[in-house]
Image (cartoon, rainbow over all chains, first blue to last red; front, side, top):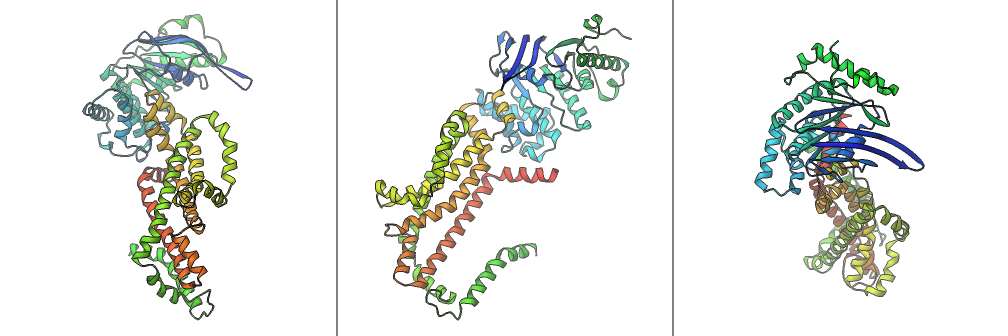
Length: 270
Length: 258
């Protein structure tokens, strides 16, 4: 579905040359929920923007459904971390969700349908007529998610979407993403710096190294499909996986892979 | 009760000032400084329905035309200049120069090619009003949030939709700040342009009364100008409340959460 091959991004400006992403290769299969996790400042956002066509990579290629990405492709939707700056404060919630749909060839009634359906999915039917700034942070991010849902993307890109909300809201939103993914069979690429979040959400976790970024490890999360905050997070397997990812991140910060064995798909049970 | 209190705060100072004026001028024998009583008595005789039609209406129409022209040109050019860094680099020095020239100085120049009719006055009003609108639009368009721009890009919102639903809306608080400044400049230029080579208008009437030593009548003209300015600013506020309702709400909600 989504294929990232040899991606490299170098920022050049005023004599300084910053290699943000060195060489990234990974794929996301259709219907998969993949979490990208890495140490802070490792170019996660740069990577996601390259994938979303918002930045042009220096080298390498991103392909979505066998078509190379050279600008924002119509089959992708983006959920930004800064929900407050991503929703338009002069539009009501329903208008915000409908705006991207106006660029598509849809009838008015179909647009209405999509908006109502997306709002219902995130549990905000009552907020359709409110302005974003009248809602709490968590609700605003739900609106941003609803906007992405209504757009009916092939791939949903989420850039640390819950980094700015409080812990309880965050747990709710994580469950919302899991539920939407299972209900709608979407493909989701989720970037986070939170190891627990990556393991809890993902079917697969891609661990990135420190900048200049390469893939440190790819890890299959063999937790059951049915996850919940209460039980999954105290399951022994969850603890093993998060410890493993944590070690990998620490190793990434030092700049060495932990050892050759950890290149395997799934860490052995301790 | 609360409404009454608010009404009291609104009218208290104007009432006080009028009272002071009334008391201070009541015994005045200075012909240039007539008692307020005399001025108010003269008012209905001077500003008859006929005069409103022959002098106030032409003034207001010219102001409206000049202001509208400045709005269209200011927002249009401002959007172009604000959107492209290169255009901005080329235009900035010229804009700084033109902005520094006081518009009344241009009246003799504008008279040379626009004559002494309505066109001249409209051009003068527009040439003064355009600057605050233009410069505020440039700043507003430049300051559009980068995350919003990326959001629009990622959802394929481009061209007219991007301009209408994102750039201009986002710049609208700044644009309105410019429009407000332009309104007071416009009223000033409306009066000044009518003091040069005019045959009607409020400014013309005031000068005419002054030259014929009809001093109380002249004072009523000044009152009319004050009232007109007040009325226009009330109308402006009503429009602004409607268009920028979201902005005031947003500001109030950020203040609360801090």
